[in-house]
Length: 224
Ligand code: ATP
Ligand code: ZN
Image (cartoon, rainbow, N blue to C red; front, top):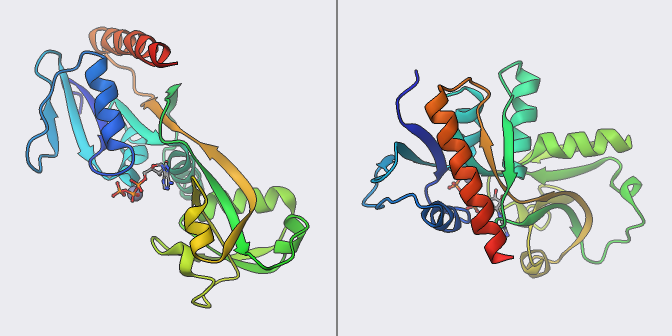
């Protein structure tokens, strides 16, 4: 179902939302975030912003429900692998990497444990929100493991006796340290990215995307 207006899905509330809104504003998109709205209409361009949970953004793009989205590569790649495994649409176009949302997805273990390399993870249970990315990494190395799927409080899983190790997002490492863990392997370095659905858009919408991209280029370069 295509609409005349370009639909952009962004995180409603969280680590990507503020910088994402700032970027769009610097690109000249005028809008006013009021209340708990799902859709916010831009005032000066045929653009609608969809404010959703970040987990929903890859699927909205892959199903062609929205045209553009801003999402962390960690979430994007996890959902893409999950959909591939289920035989669901998993294609998207990566338009550009952005200059925010930087973090790494890392495997962490007890800070006092000896660690000499991935083989030391053999047979371990790893608590994570990203089972597909962990599987891809461990399968490539040929290391056997099991997972414990957690959507929150991943870092307390070892202490709670639910898992031997974790695989979670890290930025400073302070959370790991506070939970008596140390980083053992970085499995993905992630940033926020702008993605587009693979649906063919009408010329006007596509031209608007090109214009936004050009502006984005300028805005990001000006900051560097
Ligand atoms: P939502 O309610 O939308 O599902 P969330 O709790 O899943 O939110 P956030 O914690 O807001 O998500 O993180 C969104 C994204 O921000 C992450 O998927 C990641 O790409 C990026 N990010 C950057 N730094 C960090 C960090 N230190 N910890 C977690 N995520 C980070
Ligand atoms: Zn989320």
